[in-house]
Amino acid sequence: MNSLERYPKHSHDKKIIHIDMDSFYASVEIAEKPHLRNKPVAVAGSSETRGVVTTCNYIARKFGVRSAMPSLTAKKLCPNIIFIPVHMEKYRKTSKEIHKIFKCYTKIIEPVSLDEAYLDVTHSKYCGGNPIEMASQIRNKILHDLKITASAGIAPNKFLSKIASEWNKPNGQYCITKSMIEKFMFALPIRKVIGVGEKTEKKLNDIDVKTCGDLQNVSLIDLNSKFGKFGSTLFDLCRGIDTRDVESDRDSKSLSVEDTYAIDLNSKQRCITELSKIYKKLKQRLNEDKYIDKKIKSCFIKVKYNDFKISSHQTICVIPKIESYLKLLDKAIEKKSKPIRLLGVGVIFDNRPQLNLNIY
Ligand code: TTP
Ligand code: MG
Image 1: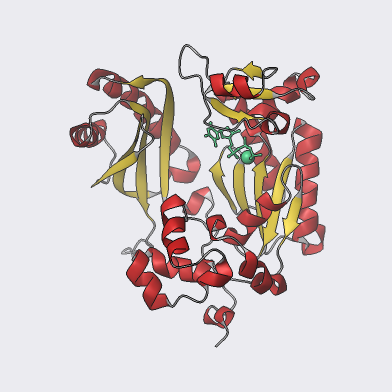
Image 2: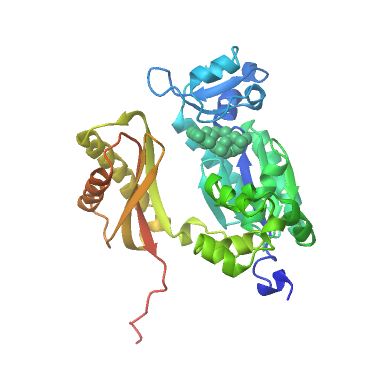
């Protein structure tokens, strides 16, 4: 049986567009200050606090400047670089405007971050149903209205659309059609596969697997024994198979709010203060129309320590109370007493259809 026949229709018959803005924070800043357009620009925390580059434009990237790099290193690599402080509110506002444009084409939009989203346009009638044309219009409209560029990937599933949006970045788009998948996957380096980081790549290199084509020769049994549950995912992804749906807010599985701190949280009291603030934000979001009717089944916290290691803790709950989050915070602090750079709080929804007992 041909690998694609294992998943009739579902994995390969959608029209998905993945949009990712180019050098997002930097582009938003430059749109406001056009005289910076041809100069190397980075958006960074100030050096008295963290002094880390969040992102930089493509001119600065030519000098080797990258996200998460200390500003001092960026300055050494690119002495003429212009640093702009982070203005989160501005980026949130721009993101909302971008989503207004998306909504003209489909209701099925899954935001991934402020600058990235999946759109399912399978049933959209715009542009004669042509997703390449839709992506092109969306990018043109973003450029026209907001003076920033976006890249897009068009493909029959989420995984491939995400790879495609990186293909012609910045300010470009790429389409992977159903008939291209087999050849495209064959040559694709395994590092491009979602979930394959340094460790998995090394494990695969050790068994001479460098491309998805090589990976297709490894049996499902071998992958499962080497990678556990992730083995089956790898088996599918290296063949370009991804059955995940684009989940709009309404059918999202979870909702969370998080904050990255300019100065690491290094006392329990500071953690409690910050936790209370993001808890308030979470409650506000839960009151939005799209979430108000959703049933909650558990709550969780996410902690990123100053060594960038992430841990999360979860507990069953129907009503997310601050007390539950404080207990989870205790657990996190008990487990590891390192300074914290990011805190997040969230809920997991119970999306099972509700029984209608009112039968008369
Ligand atoms: P990305 O989409 O990863 O990066 P980008 O939009 O700046 O550049 P491109 O997509 O063209 O490669 O992230 C979106 C924004 O998220 C980015 O503009 C700034 C922020 N960000 C951080 O704050 N820290 C990080 O380490 C990264 C990677 C991004
Ligand atoms: Mg981006």
